[in-house]
Image 1 (cartoon, rainbow, N blue to C red):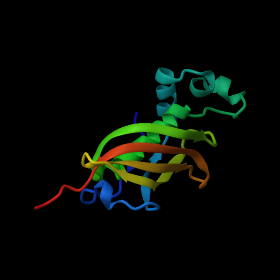
Image 2 (image 1 turned 90 degrees about the vertical axis):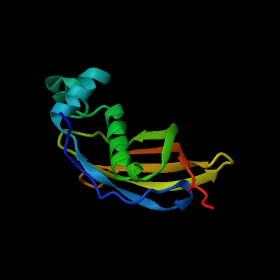
Image 3 (image 1 turned 90 degrees about the horizontal axis):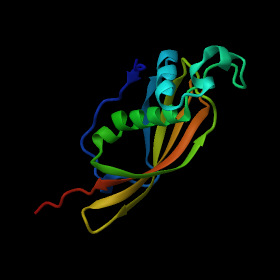
Length: 159
């Protein structure tokens, strides 16, 4: 089951050369359900603290927690549906500096923001765009930070 997703309205196409270093983009929100948390982990990260409530209740975190891979997937979904959907993205290149700062628990409502860190055009009509992501839980505490690099199209030249 997919958690609830709240998406901001779409905007016109954004090209790499429209972006400015330091520019911030708010992401929508996503509620992580227990069913989804267990289902995701059962397929991709089947450790007891992700999939076995009884074991997790007696464990370090005092209950089930989402896989870090799941948290990354939520970050990507929020980014893709609220920001990248309006950007002229070619493809991702790399994700780095991934930090899991707090556990994500069932019922957590995750929100976030992206900050443009760099835009480096090349001679092929594209630019390498670097964005930093921060994902927060419902208490406003960071649960994930990461940096992603992607290629985006530059604005087409007009005659």
